[in-house]
Amino acid sequence: MIVRESTAPAFAGASNSAESRGVGVRSEGKGDSTNFLVFLSDGRHAEDVELDGGDRFVLWRPSLRRLRPPGTPPKTSLWGLAYYLRILRSRDYAVLMVVRDGKVVHRSSVIPACFRWPFMDVNDLQVSGTWTEPAFRGRGLATMALWKLLVLFRQPGRRFWYVSRVNNAASVAVCSKAGFSYVGTARRTCRFGSRFLGSFEIDDATCAGERTRRIA
Ligand SMILES: CC(C)(COP(=O)(O)OP(=O)(O)OC[C@H]1O[C@@H](n2cnc3c(N)ncnc32)[C@H](O)[C@@H]1OP(=O)(O)O)[C@@H](O)C(=O)NCCC(=O)NCCS
Image 1 (cartoon, rainbow, N blue to C red):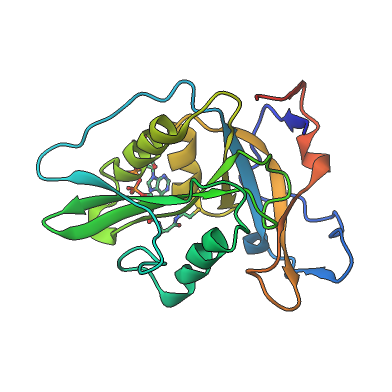
Image 2: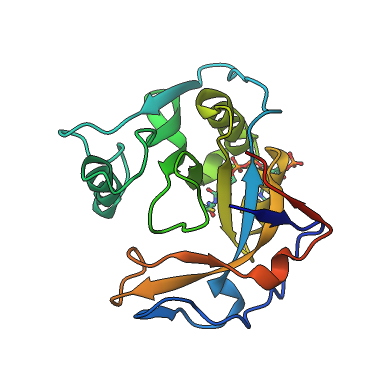
């Protein structure tokens, strides 16, 4: 797949003019909060990091007895289910947690390609569900976790994607610090009334930057 990488991110007021594609697919509403920014990395420049003090990285992977990572809502099990039903197109579904004194203070997931992100190639990974416990925000935990995920999961030809709401400044700052490049805006569609079954559609009009390249 060809990805055209734009040179300048549009962090606000992103276009929402493109119509959703596909039969039986409808888009969400049209406010700013329903527009997303798409970022991309090949992970090549990520440096391995270690945590200070009592923090440690714990890599969670699904098992039949544990379909969702500790502390996440029940609906997160859908990803574990998608893993076992082979809806996820590779075996690399995992969640990296930062644990302090037995408590999860940060988590970030990598989710393999599936219907939800039609722009991903089969071996690509989506970095998703990035979350830091409020009391631990602003200490670099999310940035370090993203670096660690890139190092752990990078492979020749593999691309990492990151989708953020257009108005989530913290999220955009984190992926930018972790070395992701801006690709374009996207909108989330629903399918059969479900966001989970919907997909993110990149608005091609926002990908008309000077550079056109396929990282893989
Ligand atoms: C987004 C989130 C994971 C960031 O976690 P974090 O551990 O605080 O991130 P970091 O400490 O690594 O911060 C990375 C950069 O983002 C910047 N940043 C953090 N919050 C910010 C904000 N509200 N506005 C602008 N920049 C912000 C930091 O200043 C830092 O840059 P700096 O080192 O140059 O100062 C956290 O805010 C969070 O859990 N938010 C709620 C869930 C969410 O929105 N997740 C993203 C889903 S796509």
